[in-house]
Length: 97
Image 1 (cartoon, rainbow, N blue to C red):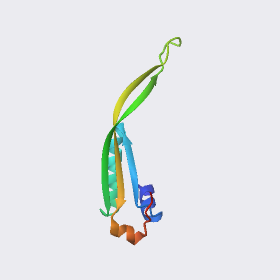
Image 2: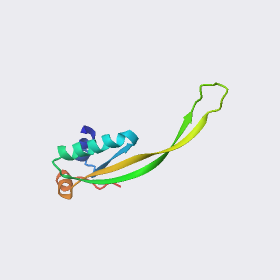
Image 3: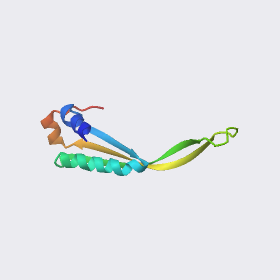
Image 4: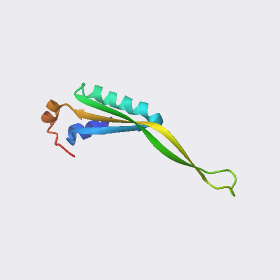
C-alpha cells in the first residue's frame, strides 16, 4: 500500500498496476480497494480478469521414474490504479508509457 502511494504521489507515476493470480486474486482486490480508500477515492480502477496456463513439474517419489509435467489453468486479475486527471495535475504526474 505504501509503495503504491509513493509511486503515485511522490514519484509522479500516473498509474500503478496490481496483479494477482490464483489465491492472490482476493489480496490484489483488497489492496486496490485499500489504496483507493487511502487516496480518498481520487483514483480510477480499471480491472481485467484473465485465465493463465501454468505448467508444474511433478517429481515422483521413485528416483527411477521420470519427472512429469502437468498443465493447469488458474485465474488472474490485473487492476490498474490511476490518479484522476485533476489529481495528476496537482501532483505533477508525468505521462509514462
